[in-house]
Image (cartoon, rainbow, N blue to C red; front, side, top):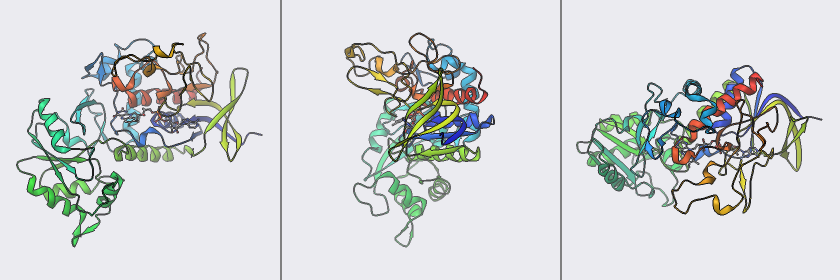
Length: 420
Ligand SMILES: Cc1cc2nc3c(=O)[nH]c(=O)nc-3n(C[C@H](O)[C@H](O)[C@H](O)COP(=O)(O)OP(=O)(O)OC[C@H]3O[C@@H](n4cnc5c(N)ncnc54)[C@H](O)[C@@H]3O)c2cc1C
């Protein structure tokens, strides 16, 4: 007996699965998301790249450049207008993101001192954009060795940013263990933890003020609050008299957590049910149609029935794809993954070479249905989106979230419309 019935079941709660669920729900479908673990959103920078590089050159206009991508690229199933429609949905459901006012990429300073061409960025990052010629002070903390503010400032200066930039390392005003994580700092600022008879925020401003000099803005690693940055940036800016911005960090990423929370709110508002903690381990199918997916719960494989399914389980990192010494597989539906038979052909000798493995993944038709080697759809009612798709190297192109948003949105739309 089937335990649950939905119109659309989305497998995976990363950015692709969440966008698929939202797009389907907004078309009136009853939608359930089933996800095993925390998605890569918790680690991601929180920036939304549509297309940052093409043939190793930085891209200024992602929508115009999408047209130059080869057939088989995930964007080729969507087109640049389709990416725009999906980004419009992203812009509507998120409240703290900027960048939708222009088709051009923004240049965001990162903790390593590179400038990242990106399409959307949190508003807490916005005052730090490299296009603003405002002299800048970067502040790092002694307990956060992965952000060395002076080195970052030097790198930015060397690449020729159009403003003066300096970096200082200070001690966080609250007493911390040497291995304190970012979330500990964020919590202290969120609660304005008491310190020396005052609050943590004013104590932090008091430590920055003596090194402020002529800087017109101050950048800190993204620890300005665990939920929202509201109140914290304003408080620091009031004390210092200059704008304060966040610099995206590596994992764990507060910006990624905040994006996840915003998308969760949007899913709840759209009446999407989310179940996390149990993996989908298989499926039941009849006549080239999936009847149910099997969810591992307390040792049992429980069937979840639906009309349509969206596979959004991520790539090798999200565990949507598995690789051993000889093969690459998609474990739930056994979708076909094309790859060279000789493992030595999966990668190039150079670390930043054009590696085959970066493009491994499911190939899809115009309805986002995974395809067999023969070109026939694996199942009539299965659609796929996000990093499980092949045909692109998102890390090199800086296109990961854009691909997930665009293919997630359209796979969810097609699933809800039943348009195959
Ligand atoms: C460190 C890091 C930094 C990043 N920085 C950027 C950036 O600067 N800009 C940018 O645009 N993008 C960035 N990204 C990429 C982006 O955040 C996403 O990783 C990417 O878009 C893929 O999203 P996804 O939804 O397809 O997959 P994932 O985020 O991998 O989500 C897959 C989901 O499927 C679930 N799942 C897998 N198997 C099963 C199963 N059998 N049953 C049930 N659930 C399952 C997983 O638990 C997970 O929740 C970064 C990613 C990482 C890891």
